[in-house]
Image (cartoon, rainbow, N blue to C red; front, side, top):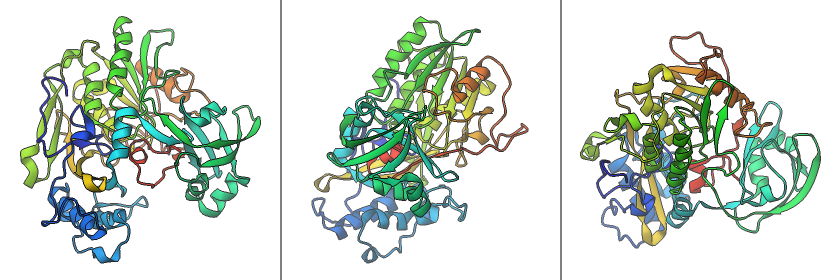
Length: 480
């Protein structure tokens, strides 16, 4: 962690999805077991012992203790995640809007693999085709919105804007009609090395292809070497553009420093943060990104982390610290969608007190996750429990954007995600709108913006979210 940061108690490693996570520079590897669970041996990996450990840890640390169902019968479950979901169910408001819980969706407290998550954090290791998919229920179509350079699909000619037409001969439209997006997910198969599928797809120009592609191990690069960092010139001034795919990979810190070295050398003061599919990750990476845009704010509050009252001794305030490659950003455009969450929202919220009308959300409303997980390990069982344990607020004490950032951002501009154009392209709809905002040109606000006449704009598409329980599913949704 950067010198000058306040450091959490060693009991915890703040991590992943809900406000990113991380906390320490070593990421989740510093997590500890928390409570052992009523005297149960930490090496007892029986299902009942794991259930007891999960219950005890959640009971001790969950941010909303008054919204737990501790009477859930562990004997009724054969899947540990199902038991976790039952314990935290009262705090969840489902996607259909029913319920009164503060959290909009379930799955934010979850069990994952220590080894798998550490490999992702340390190396970006993942297995699959290496594509991010988005679907449209109105048209029953599925598109590739991002393809990763070191993965099998990109090598087979699949990239952003490709439409997925069929899987092993079954049309995507029929899968969507019969079973919705989960039928497509099932047809794609598990993200295990060697799993292969015959994929029929169409390029943006309409040309169709069929290829048998096997899933393989690859490293997810947090910043693309094709479009991740650019200096854009719209004829008025130069603007720094950065597309950060995820905060979960530690090397994102160094890649961000390299990117801002370019911005610093070019005299950049206005920045586009393209976080449209970034579901969060390590808080430590979010802090570095904030520092790199805050050369003039060193020593001022970045964010405050708050736990439940019984754990308030763990509360901390983090401050902007000096980074050699930092710039003093005067205006920031944050590109977001419903897939933008956690650490992405944390960074945007941190700058509102300082930039005020000079920071805007571009695109559509974000997920709305102003809370974060702490990590607790049961090493003998390869279990890592991610518990919603804290909330973050900015220097003004504001952080209750459970309905997304659109309602708290000083300025918003509605724009589509034009996946028929490459990321980083200044003519792509969201990037063009961001450039317009930075240049002082007018735009149409996103629904939910206070103090403005807002036009109702809903995201056209949704990321194809899996519920396999992998670490990547939580922090970078829609990847297969």
